[in-house]
Image 1 (cartoon, rainbow, N blue to C red):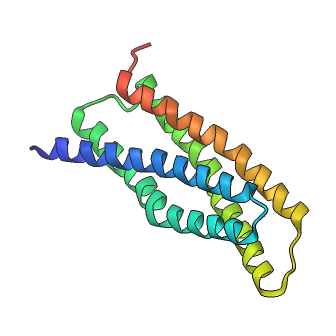
Image 2: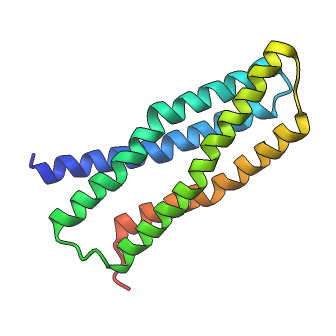
Length: 156
């Protein structure tokens, strides 16, 4: 197997991790936070934050590095519309994901505090959760379109 194929496999695996782990985290967080059981909510938030740092963050870093290497070594034109579209959508997904990470951390801290002293602002928590949910849609939608662009490489 040549180096290009190895980097391409790494790129595909990291893209799969970004999308798959993100989808799994979103499902886990959504189900956990819809529960009225405090322990379930706290567990969902804790595991979500941990999974984002353990899986999503490294894959998000690998994606542009491996992608740039592939573009450079395959001889693609950096300004091909399908590539420019992927760059833009990746930035949009990132601009949605970064606040989501901070929202998840804030939600986890609120639940941790509740376990310590019982203080909990349900209104603030629900507002954060709505933002978390809303920001997930453009991020995931963008990733779906990126997958399509990467596979089809349209020549508009």
